[in-house]
Image (tube, rainbow, N blue to C red; front, side, top):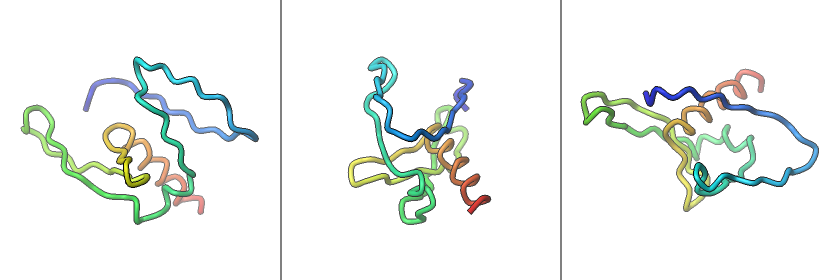
Length: 89
């Protein structure tokens, strides 16, 4: 949709790394357990208007906590990860 190419990486570490987000690209780091993606209670779908409302697309979103709703490209990436987790669980 945005015509940007995104290459997400998912990996496992034995300890939590020090995260140094680039303030030009990241407003804040949101941490949660990956198993939370399997919780149907946090998953929702929202309609998004694209191109001045010419295209409407139903996109996934996640209520991580009371103050955090993750959607858009990140929500779509998380939905793909969720789909992979469901296949292996």
